[in-house]
Image (cartoon, rainbow, N blue to C red; front, top):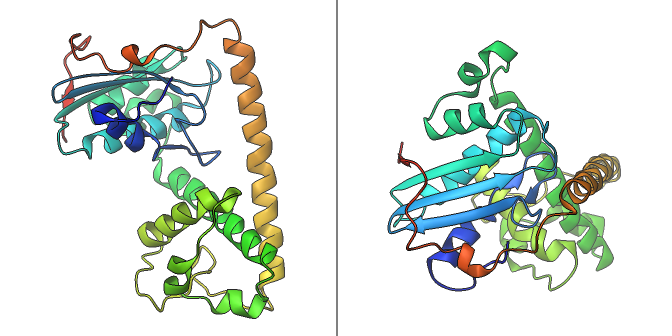
Length: 260
């Protein structure tokens, strides 16, 4: 879908860009998962589609929850309906997310379980991938390991990257430090383990090797995901025009769920 650059459409797209595929830690907007967005005054609909018909329902549920949460964060949005399409468990995912039901209840027959553990697992991987991008960029600048390990959040906030993976990942790494590790004070260490332990020149090489392993695994999964997506939708029509993105004259298909 073509991304808008102005108005409410741009606001919606910016919020959706904050939702990542939990396994890949890439925005659903970049991955091409967003199929349709429509809004009528304070009501919004978002349709999304995954690479395969059988993509894990817990992944789909996490993304649908994220879409709903991010859109409702906009002050002018009062109601939102998220719709997963072309998926084996679309009806269950859509019902659960739009009615505010827990995953374990919706998927009780499939023994779905609680998503908290899975969410924490993927949050850790996202942290590691983002951190590695910044660390590799610092190494490319030939910053000594002692200086890297001694960096604080204040130092991190002064960093600027204009190209390469670190340009995109630095703000995302800073965000996950703040939101997940509660790193807020300017003097807090910039580079720590997921457990919150500061890195040192002695521990950094082994830590970097673990980060590399995580990245390679995520890159493999990403390549597989894109390949499946391309194979499944290679006969799809051309990308919709922007007019399909903003449908101010068209009422939503169904009653919409409001703020929880």
